[in-house]
Image (cartoon, rainbow, N blue to C red; front, side):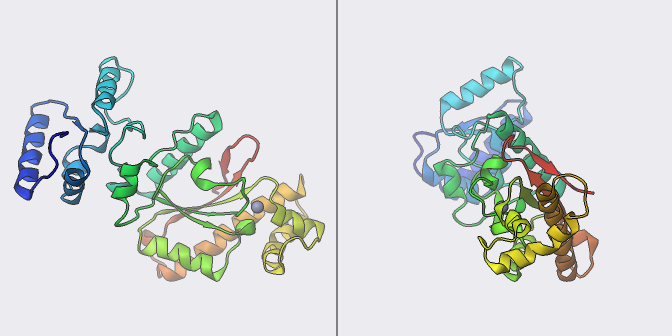
Length: 286
Ligand SMILES: [Zn+2]
């Protein structure tokens, strides 16, 4: 595609017929080196990605050759995501996904982060362009504003993948709730994760009765701290985890109202605990 600077509609359909025909014959087709305009037209008409899986579309010929070689040597499967720096399209532009697959992506991304093998996927210029018209995040994260608890890094996700709401102490507010409702209703997101984090200073401020945080935040965290006082073990950790549970439960209530009690419209809501030291996120779904 390196010599094709413009494609009209009939050219696109001819190309799509050709791709389909070759794939039917068992040929593995890679698209590489597409100029901006043809790639946008192909995306708009859902030919690529679409007819051709996103894993077979590359920014450069070298990327495709390398993947084909690795695949031939049995080192990778055809479905394995293309390295982000080689990808021309992001999978997010084509796949709305359910709660289970969304959770799997978060878990696998967090495992990469824990190992120090983050891919920082879907952050390249092509992904930016594809996502100009719309966002299709696959998970909502209601996290703390703490500078050390950054969802896109912790779950190793890229642009357009996480719908993030952050506020000190990851508390529920009217505005948070409205933001999450928007993601559930209009962006069709099926998974909401509420991660508290190790050493949350907002929760600690309630325990220490200090005034480092605004009263609005402290009052919202008070019930979690009170509940945690009777628990065995570390009070701060227990209070942070209890807060994540309480916020998730409250969110479930709020969303139940908005989904009119229809369980088929209810997203999965999971409280979690993020370890600042190991980088691991523990899911605390009951
Ligand atoms: Zn915090």
